[in-house]
Length: 250
Length: 389
Image (cartoon, rainbow over all chains, first blue to last red):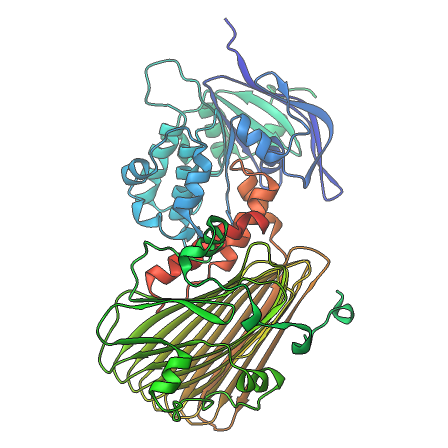
């Protein structure tokens, strides 16, 4: 039986500052699944995530984004956030004078999530009184992002290299937070979905993915078992993908 | 911006005397609507205070002082009691400084006299309020604040107009004397009518080891405010900090700053200004004068322009007269960063909500040494004004 799709992207063409970055991307993420996105720097992975979130710099020239069956292609980011899409920023900005606690309260939208409890669970309560992201280390930034997402509680989580800049000590906490976000520890059918960009593949040890994609030059070259794809890339690099027989013909 | 169209030099003759105002006998006569306004500037009957003072137009309608060690009187009474307050009256601000000080000297309405006796450290703030209740009056106030040796005072002055009064003119002369090793934090919150003119004239003298911390907040439309407190650090180790939190809505012309003269070794001064323009004009001045060796002074002006109307002008000035001084300034004016707006939008805030939160954060500057209760009051004022930001 096919699972109900949460996100559907149909032949998406996207331009950034006059340059064509995405050239016909299609993919479907069913409810409860986590997909991983591999690819070289500059292949369009981040652009895809930013376009799903709806930032105005990423201009959709053609194609459609459907979320829960609704066409959201032209909606502004906050409308998408309110419909259940959340994103973890790779380099989030500092919001001076705004305490993390205050920001979390705004993310919470009365969903009853306990800020204090969650912060304590991940050893982050000391940061609640600090300005959002101000002077945070690499690992702290990730935790701050994930805490915001846990409180926002989105149905689709977009993660852009969640492990980058995180030391070994913190990566476990980051892993646990993402597991919680994507309900990886639950036995009931999962309702949360994720799309994860990863370079190192490291995060997949903590958060198993159901499907992997390789992105090259603005298109999706192949999809398949994420672990196999990742091992292939580790062994042969992305060159191999160019000759790969599993390549999806655009 | 209509500098040319606006009367930047309000004429005293065009206003009625505050003595002709419709002045109640006591605070009980104020309407619930007026209390609402007073609450917005922090006058809350239940708050814990060491002393309270409310002047309506020309009359002191409420004056209460609780603890030992604090003297709080209408200044007209203090003048009688202390033989004209010779040591303090027009000693930190010259009477002939300008037409406004002259007018106050000639025809005083009233003001407050506060003195904290040596060694007394008051825990809760003293709250004063200067209130214009009658439209079209000029209120001329002269305040004297003395913090004796080793004493401490937190003073909050809230100034406002009746919710239906648009035009008025407030002249407020304030002379502060911070004695040896004393400490004074002064927080002034303004919420005037849209067509009100305001001319504070402030002088501060800080003696050896004394500390003066001033915070000024104005977030609502007001015709013009022009103020440049003059602070002299005359004893070694004296310190002064001036913070201002300013929003300039359309129709406001705000010319604000501070001048600190560091006249003894090892004195310290800091001026921090945050202003946001959404159509009005804000001039942020700062003038630091190093008249002694081994002094340290810093000036910081930051501005956010929220529209293409209005203006922000940062005008810093540093004067050094000795080699061994450490004086610096930084100034930056810009718009709200798109990146920050988008970040907050991705968390579910609309563009307007995101902008107002960023502006609120920008304005909530932390003044070092400011007591928590005063910081909370300022944060609360910013929060209340946020909808308009």
